[in-house]
Length: 347
Image (cartoon, rainbow, N blue to C red; front, side, top):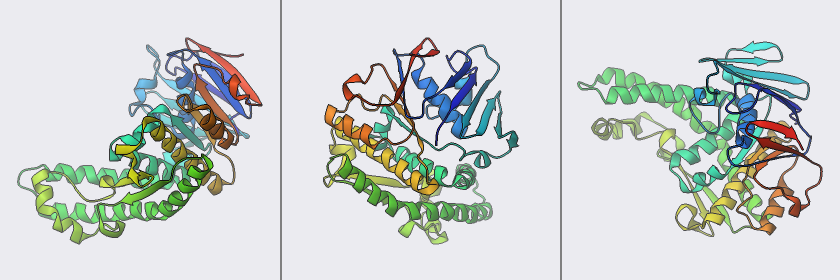
């Protein structure tokens, strides 16, 4: 898969325009705050209609601009997202009313320094990694996850009310079980694939032994009415739902020890890269084509040996944003851009 060009208007600090890209490594060099990451974000937004940096779309709109628009061109396909308070998706000249009808035209894997929080952060970070992989493999998963979260919010609001309506709670229980087990079914299928791929990638990166285990709040990853009834008194007391896919975690170890507590900063960075390379491998097998890599200074803290190993595992088209060139790695077939105050130019 190749992203041939991107066009953007009103996106963060980027000067409106269009850029044509090389088919291999696109090296994007600029100082801090120049706009390197903004370019990666624009590509991600064109692919998935959302950001990897913010949950509020208006944060991406340039100051004093009424809207933003991003259009991507790839292998003959054209897709665009317009945001002016609401989003409008266009794919090959046809408007798409649902996000899951739009996602999939451009498979993208993002790697950034913030990925360390997949290892060191709260369970929500690890669930997000898993959920995004499943959305990329099957956009309908995203729609199902949306429905589950909607029911979860409604159920939590009900639990917070005085004079709890138990009949209404039973209705929400049925809906939560339905959507929760749809989510569990998809997660259950991907976990063994992830475990084996992560082990393989750890070997390829000459890393320590990495393991990946799913920890479910429900027995056998199955949400039941018995589970909900067992916790009902505690949930009423806490005013929140304590069982289901939204409470699960992923336990990552290095050489048998919990990575979150025992891995060094460098080891956590390496594990995060292994997770993302695994994600790319699984997507590649699904679509029979290489996804596009967006790399936000991810190799800066690796030693030279691991940096060379890392870039050796990046196949296909990649965009690497950095404050420094990579001449010491002697990477072939690269196209180089410079970024200054939102202006992007071919070097």
